[in-house]
Length: 140
Ligand code: THU
Image (cartoon, rainbow, N blue to C red; front, side, top):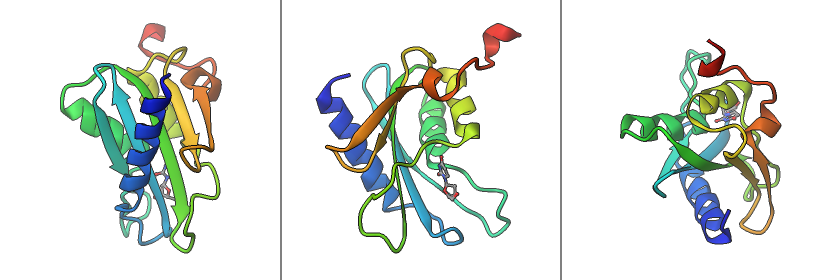
């Protein structure tokens, strides 16, 4: 994956993170997903007073893109931090539900998940690395 796109995705995820609606956990997450035709969709986590009705940043980004008609993706970058932190001091790996949601639209062998602390400090996994032996439409 080109460094230029990795940078763009990380910066978009960071931008989006600042806008998160997370008054209960006080933990902000930002994600940016790259479509097959090189469009970037951003998402952040959205929480509700009824806590179980939260939407993670990754699914916000993914579903915004799907709503616009995109069904194939290349990569997603994810960042997260507590409100009290100034910087992204830890990697923020996607939760299990988000991994499975990505599985619906992304090729596990090629789709990249970029966990970033900065544009120079990041780790890249494939979806299959983070969701091995996954269940998908081909299992039905
Ligand atoms: N969160 C995400 O947005 N993505 C993840 O993959 C992990 C967790 C959000 C959900 C909740 O709003 C907050 O982080 C704390 O769990």
